[in-house]
Each structure stands twice: as C-alpha cells, then as structure tokens.
Image (cartoon, rainbow, N blue to C red):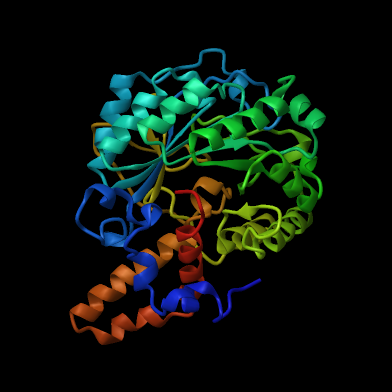
Length: 390
C-alpha cells in the first residue's frame, strides 16, 4: 500500500516540496517549541527535535493481561521538583515532544502541574490513562494546564472482554463517560488500541470505538517479551503472541480503515510507513526505515535515567548529566513510541543534510534530496502533520 504521486504530500493545497510539510506555518506537532519562538524552522532544524517518553509513575491501579506494571510491588511516583528539573533538562537538550506515561499517569497527583510547566518550557505535551480516573475535575485541570492531547486505552472487541482483560469491572462505562467529558471540556482525546487477539476484526472494533465517542485511534504493537529497561509495558500473554501472518492481516485492516481518512468509522493516526514497517518486522524482515531510538526518541524512567528505548538495557545518562546519544543497528522490537516516527525523522535528517549541501554549493551531495525513499517519508510527515493529535 505505497504512496502515489497523487498523495496529499505532493498535491494537496499546492504543496509540491518538502518545505510546506517540514516547515509549516501553523502546525504544533512539527513546530514544537516554536509556539513560544519566532523561529518557524525550530522543530525541524538539525534533523528534528527529540521525543521523550517519561514514566511519571511505575504503579498502576488495573491488572491488565497485556502489561506488567501491576506486578510492581514498590511503585514510585515522580515528584514535582524532580519533574521540573527533568523538563528543564529536556528543553535544554532539543526535546520538542514530551509524553507523560506510566504505569497509570493519573496516579501522580502533580500531573497537571507537570503539564503546565512543560508547556511553559515550550514543549508539546501528551499524557494518557487506562480510563479509571476520568472525573471531570481532573480532566479540567489538565485542559487548563495546556495539555495538547490525551489518550485513553481500549483494545477489546466488547465491553465484557475489555473489563475482564483489564481487571476493572465497569471500565467500559467509565471510558464512555470520560470521552463525553473530554468533549464537554474541549480536551483533545484519542484512543490507543494495543493490537492483540481480543481485538478481533478491526473494522468491527473501529465501529465500537466510534460508538464510544472516539474520533481517532492510534494502534500500538504488542511487546510480548521481557524488556531490559525499567519499563514494564510488556506481557507474555498468548493474546500478544501473534504470528507474522496474524499481524499482517490485522495491519492490512488498519490500513484499509486509514485509507478512508476518517470519513468512515474513525481516523487512524499511525503513519503509513510505520504500519508497513510493522508488517516487515513481524515477518522477520528489515523495515524500510531504521530505528532512531537513542538519538531522536528516548525513554526516561522514574529514577530520571535515560534509556535508549524500553527494550534495551542501555542507559544513556541521567537528568542533569551528560547524554551519550546515538543510534545503533537494532531490530529487536517494534516499539510504536519510536518506530512510527522512523520515516519522519529520516526525512528531517536527509532534508537538513541535503539543504546544507545545497546552500554550500555541494550539488553532488545535495542530490540526496531526490532519493526515492524520501517521497514515502514525505507522505508520512504530511500524515503526522494532519494526524489530528495536536
């Protein structure tokens, strides 16, 4: 399902070059801290600002079969002073997007203050929840703090299975009311749906999400092996151990829904190359774009240590210290918090490099701007720009 020359990245609204995609005039997810800057090139300069996934607590109040955080007997909650120090450090180290994750992030009582402070430092900020703590007062506090977008997790084909797999009776009703509350408050909310066997037919599942009030969904990829960082978002449940054929069948359905652009049941946020790369990975083949973990996307745990990614034990530094950044040639996992952005960062790095050669008169090296893969990456960048997240 490759992009064609008729894709919006090449023709919509007269956009015929990467400039309009990489350097838009009013798009927060690509401009990042330029919201508080006069530099329209802010996010994309130097190959793109970084994304950090920050676990603000490693405790959880559910017992999902897809995850291991509930097995943590000594959960830690990041304090506000620690979070502020971390956010200062991130802002000073070219981070543009901050995802405040968990565990269950809403268990951290300082979450709204963390969001507010990150917004003061010019970051795009997202957070999310398992749906158990969606009272209107808490949601209003996040909205008033300036939260850009919030996810609620849901991944099962029906309410009974959803509640059984999460270990939370009544959860389906909590999520439905939470989505309605977000609508009343004007809070940007989307669903995160972990691909697993309880999801069933994706078209039917998408209709269920739409009936719950969701307008957008981002599909996450199963992590069914022990992770070597402190992150506990994995499980050896049979629900997550899908074959390559099962993953491809599911992702092809996701791509089919995505092709409607949200005009059918629901809008799919994942970029196309991220989804196609997942098919390759789960078949044991190398995706078209390499992983950028350790350079463009980092994991920050509750002890304020930076990991290359959740799957690997590599500690790259800590808040306040030196960061040993850089990518490695690794295909151990397909963690969506990194891999869905592979093509996007490939585009930014190649364009930044090629533009530098062009401005320096090195036309032979500037020809990298014409590389065929950049067309696919450009379509993904346009997709992210119009994702509906922020």
